Image (cartoon, rainbow, N blue to C red; front, side, top):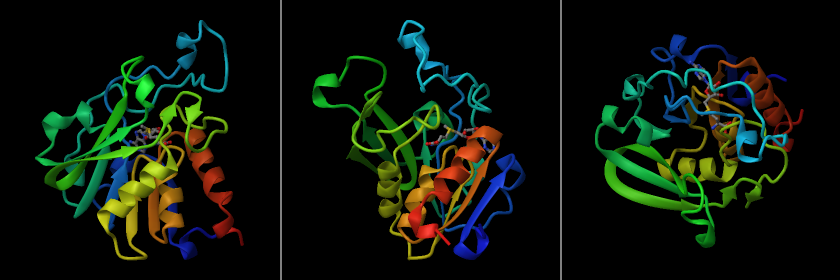
Length: 213
Ligand SMILES: C[S@@+](CC[C@H](N)C(=O)[O-])C[C@H]1O[C@@H](n2cnc3c(N)ncnc32)[C@H](O)[C@@H]1O
C-alpha cells in the first residue's frame, strides 16, 4: 500500500532518531511510562493462558520517560503522564474513566490520565474498558497496553485541529491514534520500535475500509 500518498507514514525504528526533525501539528502518544509494567496478565488468572498473555515487556519501560523533546510541538497529549508528572510543566489533565460505577475501587486503576500542553483544566472521558468488559473493540487484545480508538478520537477532537493536520505518534503500539486520525481526516506519522507491534499496526491500518485501494 502506498501510505505516503494517503498522508500516512509508518516507521519501524527508534523514535528518538526522529524527534528533533519531524514536523507535525500535534503529538498524541502513549509512551513507555518507566514503570517496568508486567505484561503477562495470566498472573491474574492463576496461570490460565489466553490472548492477554504478552510475554515481551514494553520496550523502554525500564527507564524513566523524558517528555522534554515533545515540548517544542504546539499541541501535545501524552498518556501515562501521572508517571512522569514531575518532568512536566503545568497543563490540562485528561482523565479516562474505564470502569463501570460498580467496578470502581475493585482492582488496580479505575482511570488513566494524560497531560495536554497548555491550560490547567481537568476533563473526563468515560469509556468502559475493563478486561473483557469493553464498550468497543471486543475482539482479541492486540497490544499489552492497548487503548481504545474512541479514546484517541476524543483526544484528537479536543485539539481542534484543521482538517488534514498531521498528528505525530512516536510510540505507536497497535496504532489506535492512527485509526482515529485517519477516520477524522488527518495525516499521521507513527513510529514503533518493536517489530511485532509494528506488524500489528500495519495490519490494523491495512484493514481500514477507507484505505482500501
Ligand atoms: C504504552 S505502548 C503504546 C500502546 C498503544 N497505546 C496501543 O494502544 O497499542 C508504547 C509503545 O511504544 C513502543 N516504544 C517504546 N520505546 C520506543 C522507541 N524508542 N521508539 C519507538 N517505539 C517505542 C513500545 O514498543 C510500545 O509498543
